[in-house]
Amino acid sequence: MMFTESPERRALREAVAELAAKYGHEYYLAKARSGEHTSELWDEAGRLGYLGVSVPEEYGGGGAGIGELAAVCEEFCAAGTPMLLMVVSPAICATVIARFGTEEQKARWLPGFATGAVRMSFAITEPDAGSNAHRITTTARRDGDDWVLNGRKVFISGVDEADAVLVVGRTEDARTGRLKPALFVVPTATPGFEYRAIPMDLVSADKQFELLLDDVRLPADALVGEEDAAIAQLFAGLNPERIMGASFSTGIARYALGKAVGYARQRSVFGVPIGSHQGLAHPLAEVKIELELARLMTQKAAAVYDSGDDAAAGEAANMAKYAGAEVAVRAVDQAVQVHGGNGLASEYGLGTMLAAVRVGRIAPVSREMILNFVAQHSLGLPKSY
Image 1 (cartoon, one colour):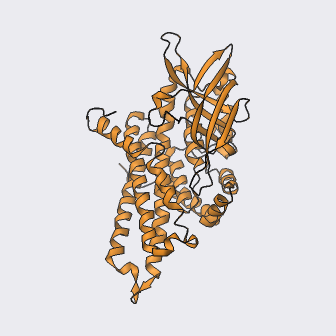
Image 2 (tube, rainbow, N blue to C red):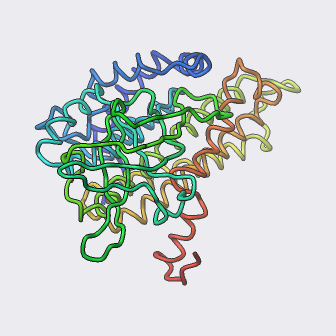
Image 3 (cartoon, rainbow, N blue to C red):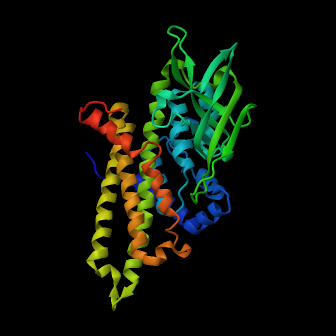
């Protein structure tokens, strides 16, 4: 059992960190505040192969696992350049298509994922189906050889820069008449597909959208893989999503902690650096400990997932996501506290992160639902919902 990363992954981290530092948090904030996207960073990362590290080699990717992709995500966030679409496009969508797509679907989409040329969003959440995915009402019915989708989705990231959206809908089982989940690739230019931005009090280069699907007609090959394999396909994407969410949070926590420690070293009060006072030093030390524990859990979750043990990966991925979100909130809050009034000044780039890290406690799964999962599946307690 190894508790350290391979030399290859460490080298990958160093290379990604070098690229991200070239852009930095000021670049990210400027893009976010102007309503633009981090397209230059995304495109360069794609050309260098960082976005496609987990895409199979035969389709132009690096052939590595979700652990490598999570390391890439963490390093971008640690440099202050978080790209939320990384959690969705290469982690969920490319993984699902690589594992369950037809040969034609793999050939069509995976080379673009490998280079970052393809951006794909993921749509599961609905107004009345957030944590309870069983209440999804987006339906797909057969019409000859085609599929026709109708429904509505909310809080879908990055649709305005996506080529397509991987939509979770439901089809009718011909034997039982019951609805069962199915996944469809819907190009954003498809007639009947409409998206609207949701105003958010977040400073982010990745926007959130509501989707409206009104008799969206799709060819038969828009269905990903086999219709009956949808549950397995769904969780093949959701576990990487949680692992990437954990890396996203731990990367932001690293960024905030670095800012706090740097300020605590150079800012002096009463003739000594403020970091010499235990009232500030101890909370920062606690954040460091919690951060390393969250990173270790995230690496374990990635290793379990990459080993092919989807059942065990579910537990580990949920725990990692929980730990990452919690330490990110604490790290940013403590960084602001260390800076005092400067913590909310635009110059220091921390105030905008207060709301951003709070998202990690809500999405892609709330901390309460993770606690429900652990109580039921890890501890064997009665189901509470």
